[in-house]
Image 1 (cartoon, helix red, strand yellow):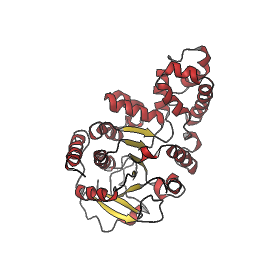
Image 2 (cartoon, one colour):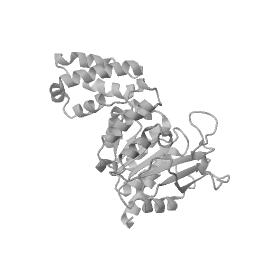
Image 3 (tube, helix red, strand yellow):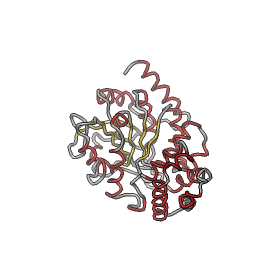
Image 4 (cartoon, rainbow, N blue to C red):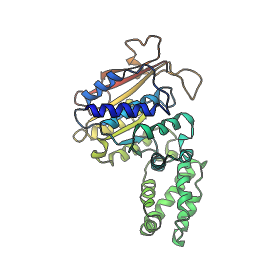
Length: 334
């Protein structure tokens, strides 16, 4: 890594600390050395987290700053197309009101998204998961008036039926109607929505529906797999993907199958977070990882807040790294 890139990465990280609390005792030198060794070839970066656990987003901001300094420009999140587009509008404009129409309306995740503006200038966010009603409602309220042709009445009525609190089953029914009408009147929709028509097209062709699985199932991951497979290798090689770690450690979920289909096309490097006695923002009790991630608690953490890194090998997970290496980020007492 060049001296200029190192200076840029440090500058981006320092800027991010203006809006996101600094990490405690992070072994940044070790991380930088491990990544320099791992990324001798262009590689798809995978980060497996636990949601709403202290230290998670602070560490991610640090990591993203390092990857951006190495030429990464795309962040793939556990969200749908509509939500990703709102995040991109926010990163471009800085308008905080936009985040009220996403899951970043909550303070912890909101601070993460806000910090990306300082940490990762030029970053593009993509979504490969299910659409959220609040995000769809934001876009549809803007598009309804533009779709003024009477031939599109059935489409606009379906859009109007989706509100922030719409249940997943009703939302899926409305999206299927919108998709049918879009495909029937595509040229007309393109004329009236102009650039926004591409976003609508991506929304209606998103195969992931929350109504099919609620929040976790093999069916959900099969649809996520379809979305990931459709992304060109040239994009994935400059992308960081952040998902719940179970999507990587559970063979029923998308990562194992994706890795088996990409062995001749793509190099990847996986980073899994292992937690010990960290604050849980969703529950009162402290959070610690369960197996298999708790298997990496040796050497012991001691009693001080710290974040360190451990290179591991495990053939149980689907890997796209030549020697089956991956990285454990160990977060203790955050």
